[in-house]
Image (cartoon, rainbow, N blue to C red; front, side):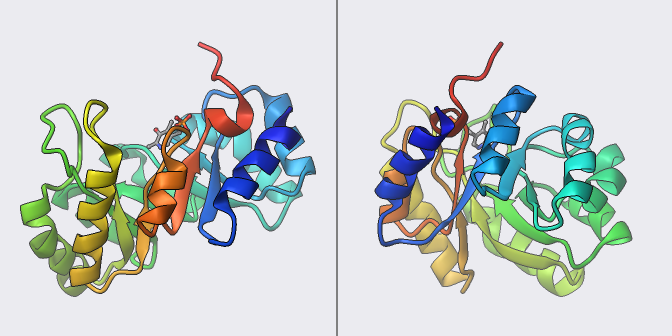
Length: 207
Ligand SMILES: *Cc1c(COP(=O)(O)O)cnc(C)c1O
């Protein structure tokens, strides 16, 4: 099953080459092992503890696994997170940035941007991204590699991908983490460098 899904996704990616992050959160172990057997090495998780259980032993088994933390991070989990994850996609506040640099200044991070200005969603507002970016990079010395967004459910995703891409361009940032199962082909059209695909690859997440 995962073979077919992977082939479909790869054909939709076509000639572009964004990094495909297989979002394995909540997925059964056998699906993850199937993806590994197919050669997938880049995975995304949104909870530190779940990821430790699932990935610590697999990371020692496969030296080339690349693990992305795509969900929110609490300050008290930073120490574990910087050890386990290669890349972080949801940098969204000063307090968290300050905590990260205590442990690993060179951690590659995307700034999460709340492009839809949604109250319930985390992320830096579009107006504040410039200041926040310069604070992280210049004052804290962090390795900010790009911007990330999750478009509001009830608005055209392309609008938000466009806003994120424009903002990244003005900051001269190359990384664009955008696009999930439902909208990754569109995100690629807007220049996504990292697509975060869960259910379209592994199947529906068991609840
Ligand atoms: C769960 C999750 C995804 C993957 O979602 P799918 O719709 O299953 O592709 C991508 N990004 C983030 C931040 C997520 O939490």
